[in-house]
Image (cartoon, rainbow, N blue to C red):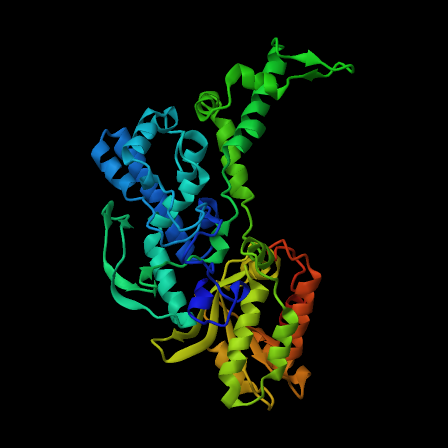
Length: 483
């Protein structure tokens, strides 16, 4: 049973920010370290830093012959089945570094030229260069290293979606990058059938991690060797009828092998190949799984936008139905703007709680409208105010949202309302606010929300919302604010 079902959230995967895990088994997705480094939020930067600091510490211990310390750090990477992602069939069992003997992993690192020569730098490098370490192990290791941030995320999501938290639960081993030690604390965590589980943001999981040994070996190392043999006119070179020289990769494999050890041997002295591979991965990271791709992984139906539209239209206007309206808008926006907007927070407190915003999203966009905003305006967060009014939206509502803006938090928000008896006047008021440099408010009626849904439907559903014109209405409305 999935978390959404167990806790009666009334929501499916498209409408929640975390991976809707099944607490009895594992979902075949993985955390990609490259995805963590690609995040723009403070949370993402903290995760990437934890992973980098941890692996650098392990390698430093090995280089400095502090082997007991290295083994101690490696031994705590054992997965405790709280994450429920990976390859396991049946009940979750994990496949982290610590599930194998820490001595074996330590020995592999110690005896690897990749580690001793400094070629090995990032944790994902080990799945390319160290025998016995695969992509699933990298993902499980990363889960453990970023456990403190996943605990923080889990607590926030449980409060957001109303999942009970229990006090005085053992956190499990937490990597402290200041003390360079594993620690444990008693914290608030959720339980399912008496077992702890941790939630993972769906925008950091992939079907497989970016780094792949076969890809690196076949498309980078062998290509380099092919060029070298042609330049030297070696015995492996043959000529086509048109006189063009060729070298078959199968002949190169016979000559050099295709193990990770041979990969290291051919990389040393040709480090530029490895750096090119890493650079390509950093510059073209795998995009987050789209809502539709996640539905495929979990064998779920795709989003039924017609039901959402009907749900929106059925909510009566008026303050007594404000909560129902906000919840429906939250569902629609979560599905509509993922993976651009993530990590939602309700009733976001500002100025020590003296001001609040209905919903705040982190802006994690990499292309399209929301990314364009990041290049020109402060918008680390996108603020959302929902007004279930039957009367017109006037200056007080506009001033309320603009009062939440700041250069540090962001100066872009969505003012969502049912309808207006004077749309031109409302847009003029929003434009006046923008011209006075008090922030940018995009006013969206129910009809506009439905128009955004229709634009989403027209776009390809399998590209994670990356194309520039996925939200043309937002761009059009924003242009009116600045022109």
